[in-house]
Length: 119
Length: 106
Image (cartoon, rainbow over all chains, first blue to last red; front, side, top):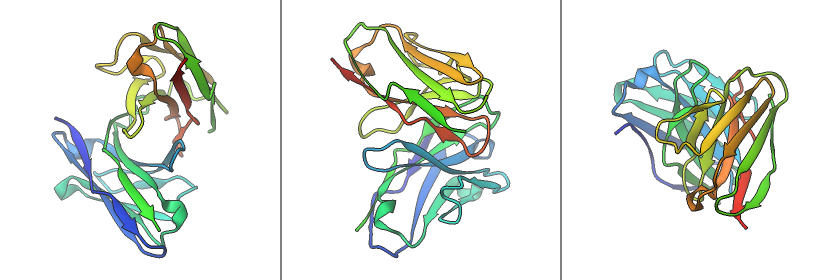
């Protein structure tokens, strides 16, 4: 079964850093870009950025540029989202999703989400 | 590119025909996807390329439109369809989502 499996829920203090992982399985990891999406409690979906596992090319939303870092280790089919200098406003569910960047395709496989609480 | 969904909330009954609209602030051809999200769950892709049904999605869901105006239609609402629906543009970076449309039971 094609899936993305994310690391578990985290509780952090303000000022701390955090890295969330997203491991792909049962497909060619290099063929699909990995996106990260934030969902604050009770709110909508926000696209944070994307990485190409093949060459580690990244793009960030201006809303998140400089606030987060997306990386990948294609040898273990895993993408990462690093959050630094955490604030209470970073409390949210974070999802990874894969995308075949032909443009027309949507995000067809999503991770289960990682809940981050900053308090 | 900003996406404006309407309505943001609607109350409907089982069997109703439901239509949700998504308007883009500039033309995006057919680079639009629709997702369904239930509480506590990850979003699920329903439609991509504005009108192509994702594999496994019931045929009561359909999408249409191009350019700046798009619609998601549920032909006969089922109990499992009560959820929040989001549109997303994939035309240009930054990729963006609409604000969501919550479908609740009347």
